[in-house]
Image 1: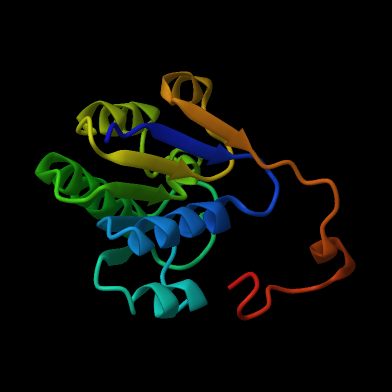
Image 2 (image 1 turned 90 degrees about the vertical axis):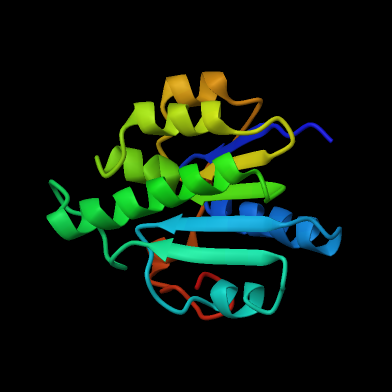
Length: 170
C-alpha cells in the first residue's frame, strides 16, 4: 500500500484528535504506528489509552510547557531528540503510520526548522503514511504534502473560561 503525507493545521480544535483517530484506525487494522509528540510531556489521557496497543509506540519530546520567546537549550535538545528519533523511525521503515504531533508548532517556535520537516518528508519510505500536525504549517510544508486539512475555529468554549477537561482536551 502506498503511503502519503498528511498535514493537519489551523487554529481550530481537532488536529491531534484527528491524528490519534487515524492511529486508532491503523492499529485496529494491524498496522504499526509511531507517534512523536513535540513540546508535550506528561500523562495525557491519550498516552494511557494508546499504550494499551502493542502496535502503537508513543514518545514525548518536550518539557510540557509553552515555549515563550526563544526556546531554551533544554527545549531545543528535546526537539532535536524527537527529530532524530523520527529520522531513525522513518529510515527503518518498520512502521506503517508515523505521526509528528505538533511538528508545525515546533517549527513556529524555532525548535525545528522548516527544512528539517521537509527533510523528514523526503525520508518517508513509499509505504509509510506520514502525518504532521499543529497550527502554523508553512506554505512549503503544505505544498509538499499530499493532503492538507485546516481546522478553523468558529467558536470555542475556552473563551468562556472552560479549561481543558480530562478525557476531552487532555
